[in-house]
Image 1 (tube, helix red, strand yellow):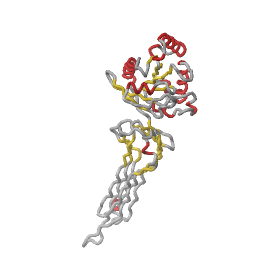
Image 2 (cartoon, one colour):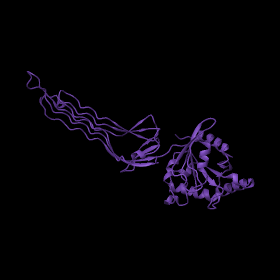
Image 3 (tube, rainbow, N blue to C red):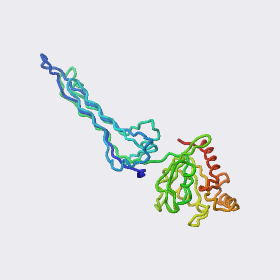
Image 4 (cartoon, rainbow, N blue to C red):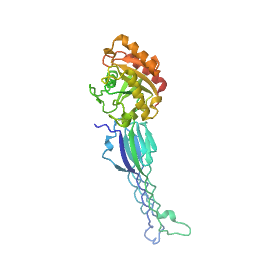
Length: 338
């Protein structure tokens, strides 16, 4: 299935039904009073989270969605039936924006709720409602009110506790694959990961979710590579793991990798650089032991990062990952944000 994390939609709630203009017609009562019933209310439109959906691909070919109109009123004071509501199912974490004003309308994170986004119009009044002491036989009835229309933009932002960022081939996907049940594609070429992946981690005391996004490259904020469009999927996280490739194919050192990545995060905004962030140096299985301490000291001194926030792991062999997972579990218990 294609991963689509943005969609545009036009919605229209149901119009209210017209009120009826009618008079009683019974034997021996030639001039019965007004008995026109009111029109039915138009259907509302709701969004509802479905945990079995993880993409907005279903909206690629659905550009306009309408709720049902209310039915007309009828004689004998019969009210028109209300139009059926329309419930639109979406992935958890979908944010709904007004496409005309860019105003955020809804942030859909609760699977037990139905989120009202457009109200149906009220039904019109039948002529029975206009009877008065001075007008015993009114013919007046009113049309139903129009339902609300909206032009919407849907944006999916994944829900995770931890976000992984790094250059292509830094080993993020290999790490996620080794510590969770997620199975992102792994390869030794750039941009193996083409969509966000979520992995559930079961710790000793609790569980948490890690989000892996496609690798960034220098200039991503200006559209280079896959750009920064996927960074929104880590905007809800409490912790960022900045993955460093100790054996970068581009010969970019650990300090420069962290500096460049933080620059791209800052360009994106959304307060990503204000989050708790740890540096994870990967591929220590290829590194001499004396180089680990040397690299750690360099990162501490040049970037002002404390030793406790620097981790050395091998995503391939698993070395160091238990310590990282244990530290994450402890930190998440303090920073969980949803």
